[in-house]
Image (cartoon, rainbow, N blue to C red; front, side):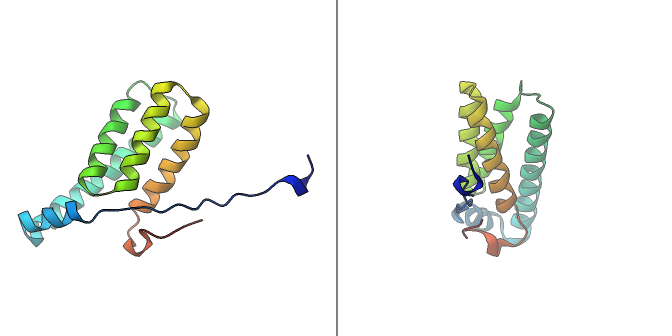
Length: 129
């Protein structure tokens, strides 16, 4: 195969977020308490993702499905639609024992998590490459 036959495929996907779960937290708790709850939840979500990344790096997969389900629930509770869906997809690949699909979808989960947890919320719902 020559170099002319190789095509780089750019990664383009949207990170979707539903603002209603966060809005509900703010309505129910008020601004000050809601900020604390949401900040704590986002920190816990980031720690969960970091723990998952460490498990995958070390190939310690025995508890991975449970941790992915936890990530999925946390994401859904915060309205992080894309992150929750992709976490579920990774779990499906893991359950099926499909190593190739797991690797590809895991890479997507990492990208989506980075985008979902980015401090610059202007990045959300934008196509990236």
